[in-house]
Image 1: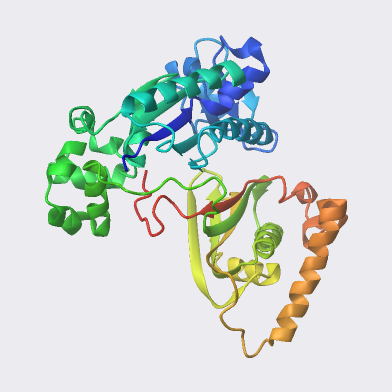
Image 2: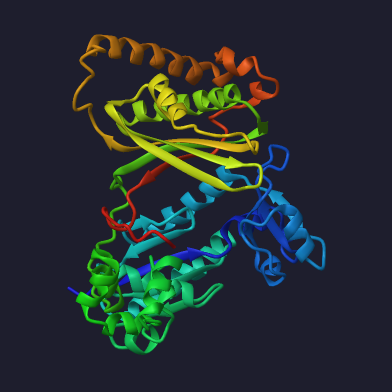
Length: 419
């Protein structure tokens, strides 16, 4: 059966949504930024006008304003609004197929093989969807149409904004192969450099290089990239109701002020660990590995991790193990801290013989009571004394800071994520 797959990419999504809610911004340079009062003041997204002035994601607000010859309008990110609009758009996609797989908040694949019979029909359907998104939501979308997910994604990147691009079995060699190798999904900077050293500069070069040579350079990933470049990817688009395997759970925050002591770091770790452990218990998961992320005042960051001797979903254990990873000589101050757990299992494989199952269950019950109290009355109903004892720290709320639940990437065992 022939496959017809679309990839939709909502153009400049955060900035476009802000302009949708505030039409007076549409002809101005707009940057969506983090909360500057809470020291999250970097550019998260920008519209095309700001992009023309050289504003980039990751710029500080000060840097972005320096680049604009006219006044830059900075809007604080409203993620609840973005998720709401994203959900509405994807619900519209479900009118055409139940095979709708999100690839981030603003992107999705749609397998429309059951409702079209040719590339011409698939292209016309993509045009219909593109026009509906504009008319019903006031947003523009770029759509790639192809016979696999990789080329559909590539197609949505080729023409922006508000365009539909067809990459078919007949034209892909002429359209795709001349493109730079870095245009292929999951070919990032490090992989691009390795390929370039071997004289492999285009997607066509990848396709025409013997698989064994690519494997010798990149391991198993070389074979995967060869499959991508040749248009032989057979990965299915998931149904909307299929759940991804959770790969890791984490939480991080930019602190109200720079941290200067071990005690301050320990307090922040404890708060973040509570949030991470609560999410583990919600998903009925236990962690086998704990990770600590640190960003210093010069915006340099590092993270370290270690494997636990026994799996856990307890905040007290996560916090203790994360703090063990903290080795810092305090030649700088610390701006941000993150705690993450990975190597997750659905049930503990074994308990520590010196810490009985009954004792572990008692601790879990205690932490669950705290979860329930906060769920009913809000996070501030109960707080750690170590946090309240430090100036400015009582405003830290892990339910309002960046928390992440990471599903597996494109392939379950993919290690190509350097892009």
